[in-house]
Image (cartoon, rainbow, N blue to C red):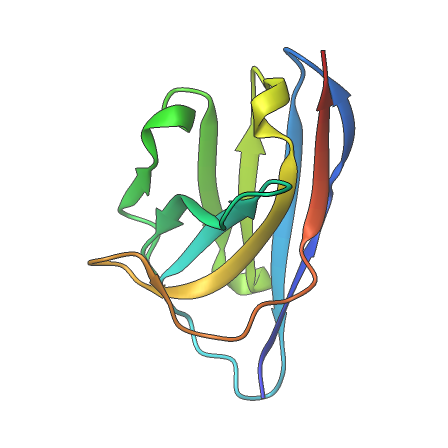
Amino acid sequence: QVHLVESGGGLVQAGGSLRVSCTASGRAYIVHDQGWFRQAPGKEREFVAGITWSGYDTEYTDSVKGRFIISRENTNHTVYLQMNSLKPEDTAVYYCNNIRYSDRTPLGPWGQGTQVTVSS
């Protein structure tokens, strides 16, 4: 069984940067299209960014375009989300998951996520 573990969250001031990571572990690991999602208090979980298994294609929700960058290192089984020019509204728990890239559908169970808090 493959587990995805998120890390790298923290507290940052508005305008700052943070990079979160998602590392897969397990003997059944297969490279897969993956995505980052987030859930703010009192809100539904939403798609943030996605990347194909090769890393050649990426997509972003409108609110983070030009500020966030998704990337991956398949040799390390890790997907990253570089977050720049952070805003208080980016505060949320960030989760990663395997996705169906065509419609951003998450495919696996959710992990614990990593908390990102942006202070104003």
